[in-house]
Image (cartoon, rainbow, N blue to C red; front, side, top):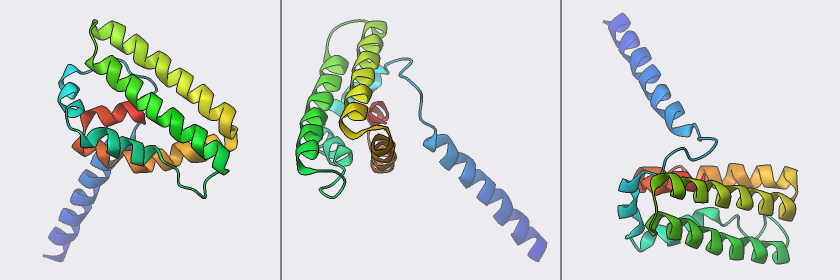
Length: 142
């Protein structure tokens, strides 16, 4: 009986760890824009949730850099949503989103420096991952 319980616990743990690791993996770039995510955009809480997740907090960096980062966050979210809701083929949307992500990465690394940027990416990854269950589109912000 104890062996059966142990075996069940072991298999259950493996199953859970595989599901968690599959969710943690972040795509290097957007390969295809899923048009079903547009429903997420109609939810008025989406932008607020994403902006909150992108906010590193007051103690993360200097106040002037924080203001620049928060301003860029608003523009970035707005631009991504504009592309997703805009007209064009999925390939065109993917190209635009990849360009926005590249510009965003350059901005953050220039503003914060590479070391602090890496810390910021870890922080927002932890903040956004829970949102990926609620919003499919949240993956674009990882």
